[in-house]
Image (spheres, rainbow, N blue to C red):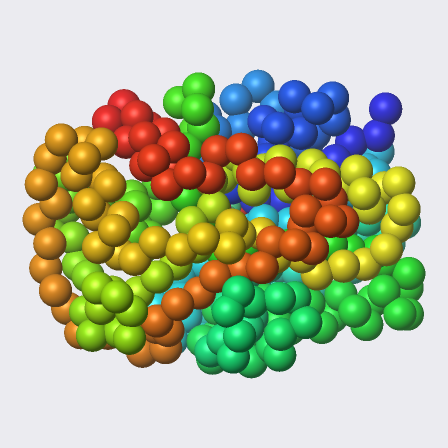
Length: 322
Ligand SMILES: NC(=O)c1ccc[n+]([C@@H]2O[C@H](COP(=O)([O-])OP(=O)(O)OC[C@H]3O[C@@H](n4cnc5c(N)ncnc54)[C@H](O)[C@@H]3O)[C@@H](O)[C@H]2O)c1
C-alpha cells in the first residue's frame, strides 16, 4: 500500500495531523530531523530521521518507500527571529522546500500539501481575509511562505505538480487525549505563554500593544484548534488525490478574540491570575487578522469542531499541566 510522507510530522501541527491521517486509514511515514519536533509525538508511526537540507536523506526515503503524496510542515517558524536572521530563514525554508519538491519530481510523486500562513497577506485591506486578497508579506518568515507558493505555481505549470497550500491563522490548543501539545522553544504564541506564566514557568505574560484601534486596545486574532487544522489536511489530501487541482485555502474561524479577552477566558479556566506586563507594539503587528473560511467549507466540506476558544484553552491547559 502506498504511503503519505509527512515532513515535519514530529512537530506541533504535523504530529496532530499524523494522528488524524492514521485514524482515517492512511499509512503514514514521518520524515523529521527532530530539531524542534519530538520523537514521542510520532507515537508508533513510522519515523525516518532525516534532514530536508540533505538531498540524499530525502532521496533514500523516497527509494525505500512507496509514496503517494507529501505533506510539508517542516520549517523555521518564528517571525521575530526571521527579522534578525533573514539569511537563516531564506536559506533553510527555501532550500528544504526546493529539495523536497525536487526529490518528489524525481520519484514521480505529484501530490503536495503545504503549510502556508496568514503571513503571506501582509497588512489586511479587507477583513475577513479571502484567498484572493493581495499578497504582500512584510516579514522574512512570511516571504519564505510566499516564495514557496510561487514556486508551487510554476511547478504546477511546468511539471503538473498538484498542490494545496493551506494558509493557517493562529494554530492553538492540544490533542484532546493529551498525547501531544504545543511546546515551541522559545515559545512565542499567546495561549501557551499565558499558561506557562500561570504555571510560574515564565515570569510575565507580555502584551505587545495596548493602543490598537480595537475595543480594548489589544490585537485581535483568529485562533484555530490544531485538531481542526489536522482534519482539514486530511480533507485536502482526499480532495487532491480524488481530483488533482491546485488551490490556496485559508484555515481559520472568521471569529476573533483580543489578547485581553483570551487572558480573561484563561483566568476563568485555570482559576489563576495571569501576571501581565504591558509592552510596546512589535514591528509589523496589525490590529485585526481574521480568515474567511468560506472556501475551506465549500471546497473541502470542512467543519469546525474544536475551535471554541474555551475548548482551545482547556485542551492546551490539560497538556501544559501534564
Ligand atoms: N504554529 C502556528 O501557529 C503556525 C501558523 C501558520 C503556519 N504554520 C506553519 O506550520 C508548520 C508547522 O508549524 P509547527 O508549529 O508545527 O512547528 P514545529 O516547529 O512544531 O514543527 C516543525 C517540524 O519540522 C521539523 N523540521 C524543521 N526543519 C527540518 C528539516 N530541515 N528537516 C526535517 N525536519 C525539519 C522539526 O523538527 C519539527 O518537527 C510550519 O511550516 C509553520 O510555518 C504554523
